[in-house]
Image 1 (tube, one colour):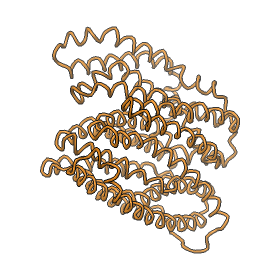
Image 2: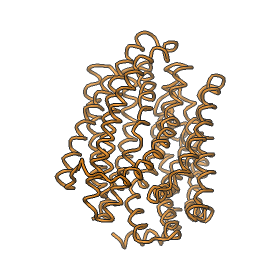
Image 3: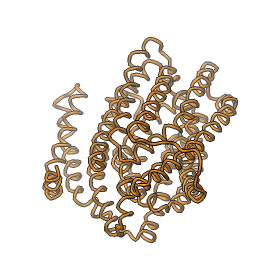
Length: 501
């Protein structure tokens, strides 16, 4: 059942990526056109500010996933139930703290954005903030419930609910936004659906997984062990939230809401790019935990990283090279004139993050072995680099400084530092691992990119004045060349996959 659920979860993960991409390409411009750049810029700015409070989650969701996976591998239901009762109480305390801190933040909005927001924008910002803070507080519980389900390898159900959530949100926005014409429709739809999904998760956990939350006889040693793990994830959560949100917050405070709108589209594609990899790696922690529990050695773990990384790079490499040769046309088709900078901003963000994305099964190994300390330290000092470059650079060089700050923090923290640690602590052969991961896809990527560069002008000339047709034809050429060259280099893997099916 575990393997079947992982496969189904992976399929649903890619379906979710497709739907998220469709949402970004179709629904986001729809929202922008209905509410305008001012409301949308306010929404993205306040969303970045409010989501920073997610650091107070203290990593409970990730901790629950790790320990539930461990107890499931050990078939120890009693310790699982007592641990989950303890975790739920901790989550309630943290959620209450978020509401308290959020109340203080509500009164600080005027001081932070008073110089760049109009009075109307400020009033809207406060309303959006209240709803988003409530959503953040509820999300803490939802993260714990998702961790319970994922820890039992029930990824098919967990990702299926994410798909339904996104579809429901899209339908509500498409129907209600033209009637109300306020960004409040978007934030309220998210809040209502989050509550609904949480209720469904609770019922599934109780009725299908037969989990009971025991609120007594907690293990002192387990509390301190899991708390240490949680603190490390908490520190990492700070870094992730800062790297993900500091750009929009600083740009909003220094350049105004319209500049946030431009930069947010580059961030949106950056997030979609990350999802292409995380959709697979997010399923690996229970598998890694189970293999380590049954005595897997370093070489077996290294080969697992390579096998998963090959799949990830086959997708990421195609997305990166395809965007590099057709990105300008994509933004012109998607958003129209006035968003030229988005192409370069996106490239700056996604190029360096490719390496850690194809290695992120290593993070599952660290989590399974409870070795997250150095990862936390590495990300902490890399985020300092990002903050310094973003805060001081944006004033002089605009949002390009923010993108460069994020890129450099990735190189320092996630590429250089972590690869040294993987080699020394896990015994992984980094250069072998990287080369085995990428070498088979490189000829296909070069051939597809070169083919489009040679033929693109001719294709656009043939379909002159029909930008959509020209873009789709060029993208089709890229995919056709990529697939035709890719298949001969992966015959062995494809035959093995067909035999498994």
